[in-house]
Image (cartoon, rainbow, N blue to C red; front, side, top):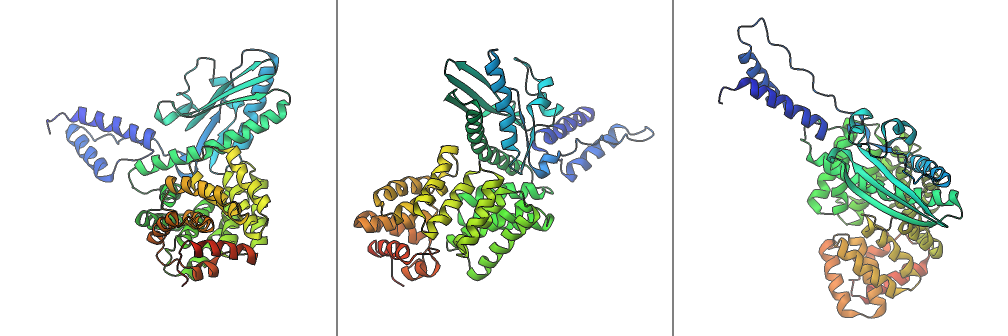
Length: 461
C-alpha cells in the first residue's frame, strides 16, 4: 500500500520460510498470486520476472509421523557410567522404534553433532528432527541417577517432558530395561499431544492423512458431542485421502468404540460392523502396529464379546510393544470380562508403573474400576470413580461402575447425583440395555454389576 514493493517481497519470503519451518505449511494460492503481482510490478521493464524460489518442501514427518533423536547421555567419566550411558541410549532407541508413528534417529548418528555444551537446535535442520531426548547418568556407590528431558526443536528447544530415575545399580541390564520402558511409555502420549496441537494450528489447506488423524485424536478423548462427530469426519477424510493408512483405520475403529459406548450411535449395528471392519483393515495393513492390535482386541471384546479372540489380539499387541500402556489396559479389560479379575488387575496396574502421569489416565483408571467392582471392592471403585469423573466427566463408561459401587454400598444420595450425570450423557441407559450389551462372560459378574445399578436407581427398562 505504501509502494515499498521490494520490502513487501522480502517480508513474503520471510513469512513463507517461517510457515514451512515452524508449521510445515504453504502460503495460500491468493497470497502467492499477490506476491507474483507485486514482483511483476517491481520488475516491470525488465526482460521478465524471476520465478519465486520454491518453498522448502514439507518434510516426510508432516505426512507420516514425528522424528526423534536420542542423544548420547552425558556422564561424569567413569567406565561404568559410560557403559550404562551407551546401553541406555540404545535401549531407549530400540524401545521407541516399536511405536510405528515415531521415526527414531539413534545416538550413534547424533554423536558427531553433539558435545557437552552443544546447541541442539541445529539438529532440526541437520537431521530433520522434531524432538530430541537428552540427559545424563550419575553413579554414587550402589545408586544410579538418570535424568532425561525431551526437547521440542520446533519450539526453540523447549523442555516438554522431564523425568529423574533413581535406582539401585545391582543389575545394569534390568535397570536399562526398566528405565527405557518407562521413558517411551511416557513420552509417546506427550509427543502425540504436541503433534496434534501443531496440526490443529496449521492452516487447513490440503492436509495429509496423518494431519487429519492428528486433529481427530484430541477430539476423541475430549468427548464433546459435536467435536467428537467432527473427529469422525476427519478420520473419514483421512481414509479417503489415503486408503492404505493403517493408523487412520485403527483410530476410526477406536472412534466407533466411543460412539457406541457413549450411546451416540444412531445405528448401533452399523457402528459395530464398521468398528470391526476398520480394526481388521488396520492390522492387515500394518501387522507390526501394536496400537492397531490393541484397538482391534478392544473392539472384539467390548463391542463384539468375542473374548478369546480379543485376548489373542492383545497378546500380539504386547509382543510387538510391551511398553504401550493402552495394550496393557485393554488386555486387562478383556480378562476382566472373561472373569479373570486378579489377572486383569495386574495387567491394568502395569500401565501405572509405565506411565504414572498418563494424559489418558481418566480412561485407563475407568478400566481399573471394572475388576475391582467384580471383586466386590466397592470402596476402591468409589475412590477411583470420584477421581475419574473429575478428570473427564463426559465419559459415560466411568459413571457406570462408579454408580454400581455406590448402589452396592447403599450410598443413595451420591448415587442419585451420579445417576443424574450419567443419564444426561446417555439418556437411554437402563438395566435392560446394560444386560443386552454387557460383555461379561460370567452370569454372576453380570448380575452383581446389574444389582448395583438397580440399587442406585437405574431404570429397569
